[in-house]
Image (cartoon, rainbow, N blue to C red; front, side):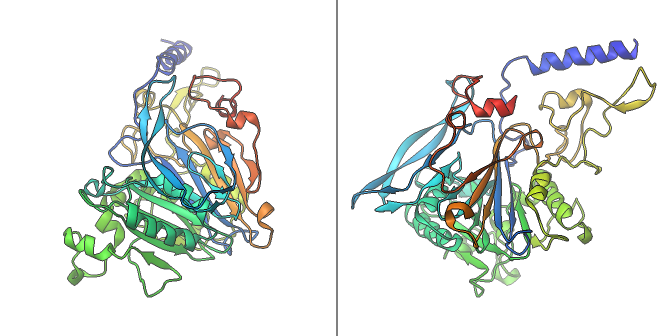
Length: 451
């Protein structure tokens, strides 16, 4: 068979895979979450003094639109309805629906915020990114607890002005009303500093939460890529560490930590699988290696520093480049060995069909293998990203223009980032138009980016 005929056959096979209809695939495969990446930058590590956080919402189900939730005033004694998120497959494309499960007291005034699926910044320049790490299954108690990740992020932005204030408020609410979600990391930035807040459930049959928070040094960069990152903590240094009052007792009572064996390490007590996941560890390595190649960090290391000082100050374009990365130029680039014989030159070259974001069913066709097994490698840029944000909080500017969200839909490697100031009161209609309830929709900005 000639090279040209082989090429035609490959095209036909790929087309049959790509257009064969819906694929019933989860947001991740392999037993651990791998659905989001968040990079954080201290004010002295950024080129212009911005404090930065970020989020790629890498999920098949998350909503594909945004709007602006304005500041609001409520009557004294008003209640806020809490909801739980459940999969909903009755529409053209998989999504979620939200069911009421309880109420908590509402404040008399709440701040306005940019309402992405995970709200990302409020009018006071408080910004939040997110990354799921799962944690021990035995800690997950959704039936007795009321607050999940999306609701907690919203509450932080509605009620708080600073990262520390948001963490303390979250601790109080979760102690009373409980954490209903899996293990999550929220990366919380204000105009002065950025923190990583990691939280898990209290255990089966219990109400509450276990959480820890660590501040990123002002001249450092950090990352969460679906793996718990916080290890030893020193609560005698409140400017850098905070934690729930049960953090030691739950670990000890559960047999996950013995004080006679050394200091508590949060990740090994509460989210051990985080250090077993190449989907998480490889992205951690890549971010640090791009920011500080002088460190020579090993890509197969079990742990990396919580944060590192970058070799040069991080610009906005550098942040975008990190999120567009697919391990190009490294041994982990999955397309480097997918070659074919070019009939015009007679040389073996990378196939024009090969790309770093092939759907799951396409990868076995090329016998791709890597740290993620048959799925190759979990790159930072993903083909199923719903939206992504990079935020800047800038102390030297008024809040109205100091806070900016850079928003992109779809795979950020082929997308563009659009700036949204935190004070805006509306967005263009296509950005508010759902793109998943009825399938393809020319009025939806998400579909314009997706195409």
